Length: 176
Image (cartoon, rainbow, N blue to C red; front, top):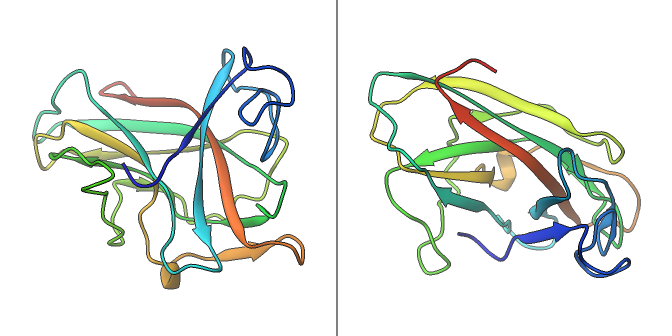
C-alpha cells in the first residue's frame, strides 16, 4: 500500500532478515502464533516517509454500525531503528491502495494512539471504536499523520527511523 512492509516468520532460518525472534530490525517473538508484520512509521531524514500495510475486508462495513478495532505493536530497535513515535493507527477506506495509489498521509485515522510507544520487549495494544460513515471495504495499518503532527523520541544518537512490529489485527462489531 505504501512502501514495502515486511512479513516475519519463525520458519525463516535463524538470523535471517525476516526471522522470528531475531531479525534485521530487533528481537521479538510473535504475540500469537509464529509470524507478524513490520513497517517503518517515521524517518527523521525524509519528510513524511513511512510505510503502511493493508488488506481487503471479507465483508463490507455497514454504514451507521459501530465497529471495534485493535492491533498490537512492539517497537523494533536495532540498526538505527531507534526512534519511538505516536500516531500508529487503523484506517478504513472504500478504495484499494497500492504502490501506485498509496494511502494518503492526511492526518486521519479512525483509530490511533497519541502515546509514544518505546517498548521493545512487550506488545502494546492499540484499540478503539468508530461508527462507519461509509461502506468501508479496506483496512490499513500505519502512521497516517504528517511529521509535524507526529511526536517522536530519539532513543540514542544513531536513531533515525521508527519501525514497529504489528500482530493480531482485529475488526468486529463485537467489543474487544
